[in-house]
Every structure is written in C-alpha cells, then in structure tokens.
Image: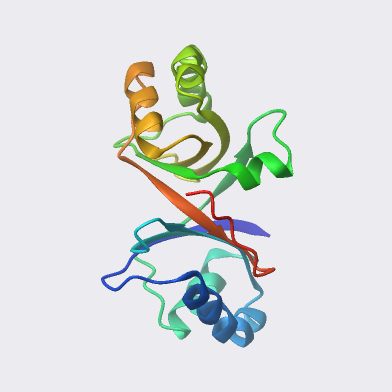
Length: 183
C-alpha cells in the first residue's frame, strides 16, 4: 500500500461530523478502489484539513476521490516518519501541524538535522516533535507537534532556523469515530 496525503481548504467551515459523513458516503467507492482513510486533521477554524490515506496506487486513489467530488489539487504520495520513542499516546497528543514547502528537493535528514540542532528552542517552549509526512518528490513536508499552541511552535521553528510556511492547531478525526480535542 502507498501512503498519500490530501490538503484541502473550505469556504464553509466543516465539523468533525461532516468529515465522518463524507468518509462514510465514500465507503463504497473507497472499497472498490481499495482506498483506506487513516486520519484527517481539521484546523481549529474548521476551514483547512490534512488527510492521510493508503491505497494500492496513486491513480486508484485519484479516481476514487474524483468520483466522490473531492478536489485533488493538493494530493501527493509520500512517507510517514514517527519520531523515535513516540508511542500511540504521544501521537494522540499532537495538536499543531506545520506546513513546509521547498522550491527544490530536500533530504529529510537535512531538515531533521536543523530541527535537532534547535532542540533547545523546542524544549524551551514545551514543544515536542511527533511525526512527519514527507512527499515522494521531497518538496513538501507536514510535521506534527504536541505544544501549548501554534505560536509556540512558530517561535521555536524561527529560532531554530527551520523553514516553514504555516503552523496551525488541529483536532484529529479517525476512522473509529474518535476525535482528539486538544486544540
């Protein structure tokens, strides 16, 4: 199975119930194309969402998404990297998403080295790195953190010299219907 990620913006705010309903309505189509929904991260303003799916291949997932009317403008294949020592409870504590975009391909290790060098900046603000979703073309990265708020993460990223586009708080919505509410 291939991991793939969808980024969406909405004019009208969505609720976690709306997301669960959309995924439920996509069930048959996802089944036919062997698409598995792993998780969605909904911004605190409910206008942005990042979703993680697995499927046999990218084209099958695109077909399934288009058949249910999903905008796939920002839909990419990638890999999932969880920080060493992170356990399931830590993943559930993640509440801030950081978007990174690069003009040229970067090595995951190069960005990790920058963050490791600035670990003091994270610790000072009580920010803990949890997981990275890294695009196959190495130009896009989404990182999850457990932190008091998004501004703490932004400040730590700036001080550590780690490039980022934006940082925002989220709640996770999962296939079992559970939601994190640690915004």
